[in-house]
Amino acid sequence: MEFIEQALANYCNAHTSPENEVLQELNRETNLKIMMPRMLSGHLQGRFLSMLTYMIKPKRVLEIGTYTGYSALCFAEALDKDAKIITIDINAELEDFVRGYFLKSMYNELIDFRIGNALEVVPTLNETFDLVFIDADKENYLNYYHLVFDKVKPGGFILADNVLWSGKILQDKKDKDTRAICEFNDFVMNDSRVEKIMAPVRDGIYLIRKK
Image (cartoon, rainbow, N blue to C red; front, side, top):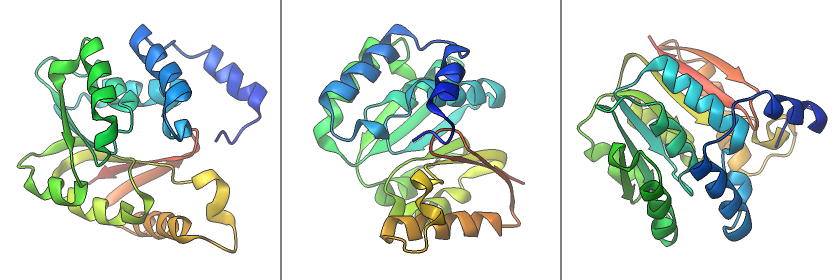
């Protein structure tokens, strides 16, 4: 969901660097063949994530929630050759589809794709991360945050997607996922261990820097 007029959103896209051919194909195929394609980061957000990665220059990236692999490829394209992204998703049904696009890209060797429950996988990772992207089930956002926090180096970043949740965060009556997002947003806002800014990019990205 965009929080600006469609004409302005189109203008932003028109003045943003294009996706590469693999991302264009993945974007198209996800929208044609995969359920809930609105979960895809898409052109503008994908370029935003890639640009942030170029700026941060992380050596280790963790992504919780791969979906069809679009955002993982956006991170990977901005990584140096000695860097790595670990991306975790629970949906084994999409594994072949996702791995196919990783193989089509120039970045497959930089991507460690794991199928499993992130709540179980993350504690097994003996890594320190420069950048973590949380974009999985909303009910566990705060659990993911707690799980990864000590694995993020000082000065590292946590990004959380969908923190505006299609505007539902402002509604009086909130469903379970909306309540979870609000709880996460409020916790981060009051967490003195981090600096933070909530950016209204697409469905909202919380940019969080560990002090």
